[in-house]
Image (cartoon, rainbow, N blue to C red; front, side):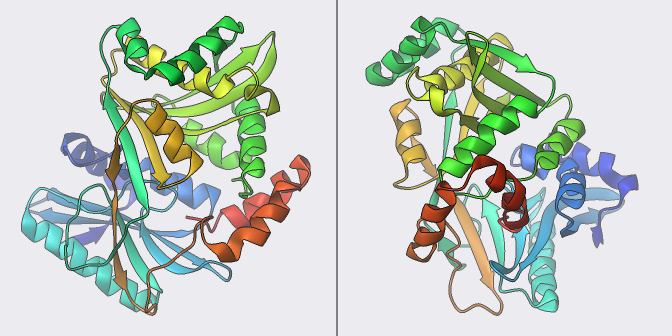
Length: 339
């Protein structure tokens, strides 16, 4: 039987997620609350049940936008998603219900953000990869494992006198992140989104901020789940480039994670051929393909809503020239539909 998650069953859902090897940080029920409060999108968190036992889960978000189309996503604003099930009947039932729901909602497409390929007959977009690497329990060995040229960048940041601290609020993080995102030509999320994330995942979310002589250089919001750390949202100020602030920042995330006993560093999703893709490879991480599988409903082709699409180039160029305050004001109106 397929049911829709309600508040009374959040703990059951999360117990299933915690016990399932394929589940990720982004499968937790907390994301339902975050998306509801920050963006107001309709969520459909489906689960399969057998003899009062959850046997599978599927978080879905309906994002309908006049600019970016109409989609059902697992899961919006998250890099990993898709069905997690303990048996094939539960998996098949959830997939069937998701396709039925997509048809009933009249969306353009249903997108499952899987880390592994589930249905070879379904179309998927060869656009994204993820970067994950095991950490050595000794801090110094992780530094030495970074390829020589990139390691030199980290050492330059250390020699420049950079320091890292853990911030208790999102203020400085948002300043650095929004500036960095504006410089990339991308609309920024609202500040309240990050505050809600921090509130919901209080024990699993940490903001590391880099300073130089008391001035903000960069900041990154990290997620901790099981034995992994995921530096998920981050950015640097104009000062960061000259003193290797971003290089130092991610090293500090890694160093602190090792000291916490974390075993996996998840550098997150990147588009093939982009600057972020090259940056992560320079750290010695190897790309792993992500299999975002689609069920097309009203659309005849796979969506192409990403900055590499030539039709967005004029918009991106114009956005980069916006004053930061203006981008912070109007960016959230656009970003809420960029699931």
